[in-house]
View: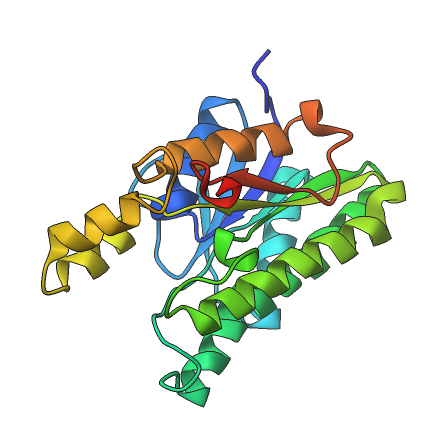
Length: 244
């Protein structure tokens, strides 16, 4: 039997980057997956609902459609997120609000409606939130990003305590710098792209970026029954960044 055989799953932001890697790994492990994203996935095997994670009605409808189609919900991955460079002085208030709306409110809404669905089932489940090393340590010129990911870290721990006795496991993954199309895009805009990429690699103790598939492997563990006693954890996939 595969590790996620017939698990009923939602992955937000599942059309690209880390989310895409998670979806594809879940499918390989036997899961049924619905992607909630502004853009449809460019691969087969999933259900798709256009979703704005910062909008309560949109997230509620995503969960309702998944539970109706699959007959329930076992795993919710709150992965959708955005990044932005800036210190507190050069971050505009509107940009800060946008970061909070997607990165923090989006996770709150995914938690809220997924946990409600799991409570109705009375069969437990797993919620996986995407945090970051930026939610555990300060990153240069990433003030708003770090603030939102720090919020995800705290929200994960608080919610985990609230719902552990209901059999609902709530955890987060904190990746290091991940080799995604978004990272490739932003480095290509720099004056010296190769120098910037090398600097980003050297954030990790092993001297390279984390691959999306490595984050997906952690998500499989947290989604599987192997993690029954993993609750309120912030799982590092950071190449040793936090060990320094």
